[in-house]
Image: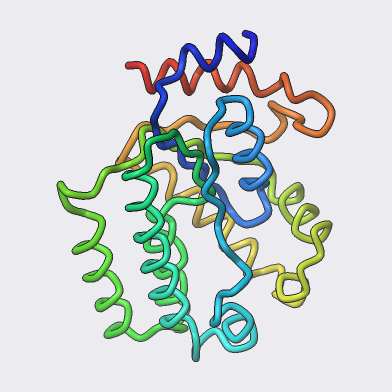
Length: 217
């Protein structure tokens, strides 16, 4: 399928969300997909987050603050995307915040039950309503834990290099459990071995055909 044919197949406006554990390559995939479709991107913002560095140094002190910050920022961005006149590929969904990160920190004792209940109540009031527009499709990237750990090490973020491997292992397992029960929108699962954006951008085309078919249904 040629690039021009892809654009003709896709609606002018749609929201495609890319999900997957830390280090799986969501940002690279989202940018490559958006380029093929002529869509805009909505990337997860790491820089400028006032809690992130503090959080990696003291999970218990800052977990609740970090999750509230992410929830507010992602909700505002989701509203901006919905009101935009163009199609968007989004790096990470708002659903992962509560389904994985907040719950993980609560169950590990980094967040009190009172704080977790407050967080869940906010999430349900903001997201789990008829007024919240779910993505048209969620593309879930998956691979082996060894591949993901190597990617985390390769990108060299200092705060991630100092994080215990057990943390990444648990997150990997939680993502696997989460996606098996996710039902808020259609899901397409993509193994990172199915494409190679660095050497063959055309390897995205079979995946794009699946996305197009799902959206057009």
